[in-house]
Structure formats: C-alpha cells, structure tokens
Image 1: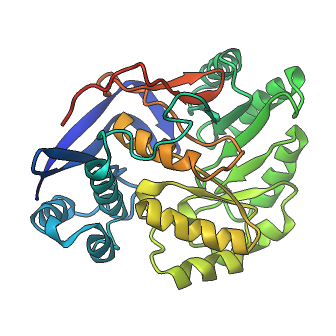
Image 2: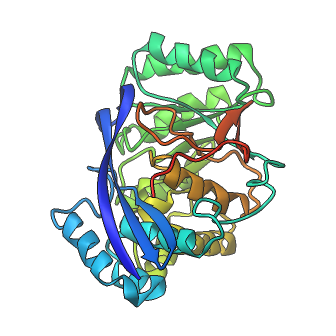
Image 3: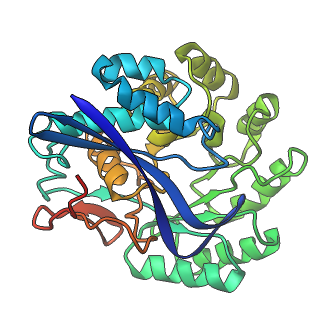
Length: 344
C-alpha cells in the first residue's frame, strides 16, 4: 500500500463574503491511497484562518501521513488528533479504497437516488441588495430553510432583510437560520437576540466569539430563541473536554463540520455527547470540493436526522469536479446516472 497527496485550489465563481473577509479561492488537499489495483481518495478540507490545523507544518504532516499510511486509519486518527482535516482525509481515503467503487462510500437509498437530504439555502454576506437577491433566488429554487450569514453590514439592514422574508412567508413556510460567526459583542448580544426574535428565527449560530464560555452559557440560558455552537467546537480534541464544554454552555444545537472536528469519528463523538445532554445537532460541509461533500452527505444520510442539513453542492466554484450530487427543490440528491469526473 502506498499513498500520495496533491494540493488543489478551488476558485470561487464570484467573491463570497464572510465575517472574516471575502473568499476568492479555497485551498484543499487530496490524499490518494493505492493497494494493488485498488485506489481511494480523501479530501483534507482545511480553511485558512478558521481550521485549528492551519499551521506552518500542515504539508509536512500530510507528507508524514502518506509515508506512514501502513499504520492504518485507526492508528493514524489517534496520531493526527491535532490535524482534524487530515484525520478526515485519511478516513475518507481508506473508506474509498475499501468500497466497491471509490465514490460510493456508504451505500443507501441516498446513493441509489431513491431518497434526498433536506438542506438549507445559504445566503452569503454582501450588500443589502445582494443578499436580498440571494434570498429571493433561494426561495424560488424551492428551499424551505434559508440561512443568512450576518455581521458584515449594518444590523438594521440585516433586520430589514429578515422582515422582508417574514412579510412574505410564515415560519411554517420558510425556516430562517442566521449565522453571526461571532460578530456580536458580549455586551450587545442579548439585546440583538431580543430584536432578532421578532422574526421567528429557528436558531442563531455562534452569536459571540468562541472561548467566552461563561458569557455564552449566560446567553444560552436567557436567549429568546435557540443558539447553536459552531466555531466553539473547533480545537476541542478530548472526549472529556467536549463533554465538559457542552455541559457548561448547554446550547440548543451544535453544528458539526467533519473537516474541522476529526471526520466521521470526531463527529460521532460530538453526536453521542449531544444526544446524552438532549442537545440537537445538524451537519454542515465546510466548502469542500464535491469529493469531500460526497463523503459527508452519504454519511449524514445514515444518521437519520430530519433537520435541514448544511450541505452545499460546491456550485460556488469554477473548477470543482463533476459528480452525481444535485440540488433539487431545496434537497441534496445523488443521481446515480451521472458520472464522476475521474480524479484518481
């Protein structure tokens, strides 16, 4: 058995705004495993500036992983604990290698094209008019749940956008999620949550920056609508620390990005703790290519979570890989009649 790797830059079709700036391209890394005539591929979906493994020695660690691929995925997962995106890439590559075909990792009614996964339509940050255009587009495309990234323009203008949605659609017709990416100050957060509650919002992700555990716990206790933790989970490695974090903050939901939290195994740990504490959850991709998204979507389907998941299609990019993944009427579908673009 041998392994190699490749760096790849995904190019955005148009600049995509986040609370941490505008994204023009997305760096990703692929690990390829060969064993005889069989091949597997995994994606290490790092996001510079956000992933906890955004480190100068990142490429050296991928090289080390390839040289030690003979150790197997379980031993490597333990040894790569501080590199969750590489943990996930290794898990994915081994699963791809072991499967009958490299891209059907978890056969199910999803991969057969029988059932679909409900997803939220993501509205990127931009000017008020740009965001309104996206909102209308997502609703016209059949999404029943829209997620707005907020915190980049004036809060009053964001409230106007939310008012627009609610003036047209009831909460039963369109579910609204917002993602603050830690944009609110500790001092102003509760007041802003009270203002946002007017719009019958499903939940808000990460209203204040991570590592303000005491303040986040107080917010979760007093919030007028559910709070979901996202960035808060990044960089928490030990099972005991994960449990301690959720017991302290007691959020309503946690958002699980496998590339950021140690792949399937790391995600499953968070789910088991959340379930024990009666905390809801859903799974979100983190701007991976269609290779990583495919693995996340197939695994997510098997978790039987009825909430809309955060799984985009990678249609953001000009140079993504053609795949059977399609978005139809606000759901992610796998069309087995469509072929993968060969990358292995």
